[in-house]
Image (cartoon, rainbow, N blue to C red):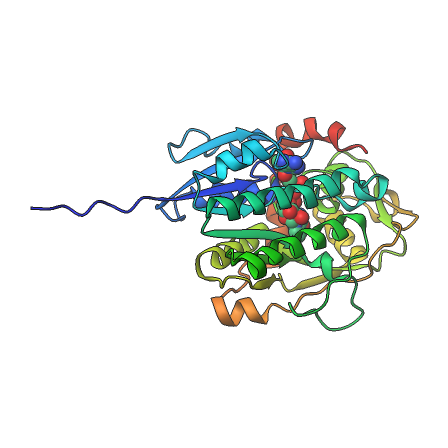
Length: 335
Ligand code: NAD
C-alpha cells in the first residue's frame, strides 16, 4: 500500500514581524484560529520600533523562527528567499514625524530594502509576495475616497518612500511576472502599538497624567482600522488575492483628531482643559485620507468586524493593564 505524503507547510517569510502590525499578523497566523499548514520566519532588524516581547506568544512554537537582520542585507535576504515560498513584507520606517526630521533611513529601508527583497524573491522563484503599504501614498482627499486606480501623490517623506516601494514591487510583476500583491490600509489601532503614534502616545500620556499635543486645529481626518481587521484583509489577499493587484483595506470609522482626542480623554478619565495642548501643525500635514475598499469586499469577502468604540475601550484597557510593556518604550519614543 502506498501512502500519500502530507503536503509540506507553506513557508512564509514575514519581514518586520517584531513591529506593531507584523507581530499581530504572526500571532494570528500561528494562533488557534490560524491556518495549520504554515511555518513562519520573522526577519527583523529590531530597530527602536521592533520588540521581541511582541512575539513571546509564538516564540517557542516549532513552526516559528526568528532571524535578526536587515532587509537591505543582500546576502542574508538571498539566503532566506531560497528557503521560503511566500513573503509578507511589513518592515519599514513607519513614523511620519521622524521622516520630517530626517528621511535617509526611510529611503534606505522602505525603498532600497523593498528592492532588495523583491529582487531576491524574483531570483529565488518565490511564489507570492505581499507588500504591505498605506493609504498615505494617495495623498490627501477633501471628499470621497480613493480607488486603487488613483495615481499616487504622496506628500511626506514617509509616504513618498512607501509609494516608491509600491511602484518597485509592482514593476516586478509587470516586468518579471512575479506574483506581487499590494495592500493599502488606513490608520491602524490596537494593542502593542508603539507609544509614538497618536493613539498609544495619547493614552499613555493621559494614564501618566501628562498633556497630549493636538496638531493645528485638530481637524485632520483619519479612517481607523483595527489590527484584527487589517490582518484579516492581508490574509485574504495572501490566500485569495490576484497577482499584480492592489487592494485597499479600510476600517469605516472616520474621525477628526479632535473627536479622537475627546474619546481618548474620556476613556482615560482625564479633563480636556488641563490635558489637551494645541501645538503648531505638522509640516505638510495631509488633511484627510480615505480609501474605497469595495474591491477587497466584493472580490475577497473582506468586512471590517471590529466595532470602533468597543475596540477603542479594549485598547485603552490593554494599555492600563500592560504598563510593563510600554513604560520602557516611552524613552525610546522620544525623537
Ligand atoms: P512598526 O514601526 O511598528 O514596525 C516596523 C518593524 O520593521 C519593526 O519591528 C522594525 O524593527 C522593523 N524594521 C525596520 N527597519 C528594518 C530593516 N531595515 N530591516 C528589517 N526590519 C526592519 O510599523 P507598523 O505600524 O507595524 O507598520 C507595518 C507596515 O504597515 C509598514 O510597512 C507600514 O508602512 C504599514 N502601515 C502601517 C500603518 C499603521 O497605522 N501603523 C498604516 C498603514 C500602513
